[in-house]
Image 1 (cartoon, helix red, strand yellow):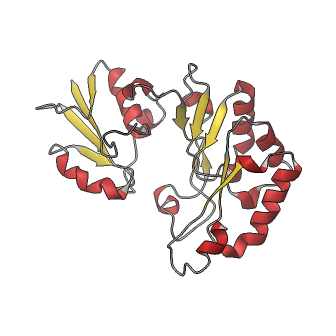
Image 2 (spheres, rainbow, N blue to C red):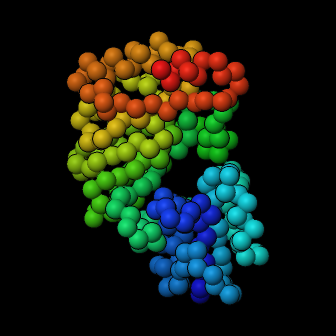
Length: 245
């Protein structure tokens, strides 16, 4: 069977960030002996899937073959991979040159921020997998897509696995600095990372942000390793400049 996968977020002249769902679908079909093609114009694929993460690329769905299975947060928040696909080891060969592993150890979030799709897409936080479900042993770097790792019941297990494997980790979606405390700051100091990403989306929790920063600094984590996502342009944005500064 010929399987066509379409990544609607791929932009020419730019290295694509791998689409996790498509890599899992690729692994699933290859395990069954199917031929898998990424963004290759097949005349008549037996089955086609398309994924769009970012809404500004949703217009590209016009290029998708009729009858294709379409998903991704850029188009529809509801579709999910079947369990037998969701927990497959991703097929990293789908994106040549990718030298890192990527996945979730938790899904959902304890917050209900009005600007965020996570409460609708994933719901309440829950453990999802250990890193070994998506860790390719050839990779020494791992990107975690957890939306609020420090709030998840399995955060210690995840940190211990990362430290035990000596992996360089990118907490790509950011950590909740409001949850930084004396216990987890010890793990954050031990884990190998170039940057610790946090978010500062509302001036109302400035005091908590400053407290979290101080805990990190007191633990010996260099200020140059701390970076923040800052929400700009949502609602009354009169505090944006202050938060950026």
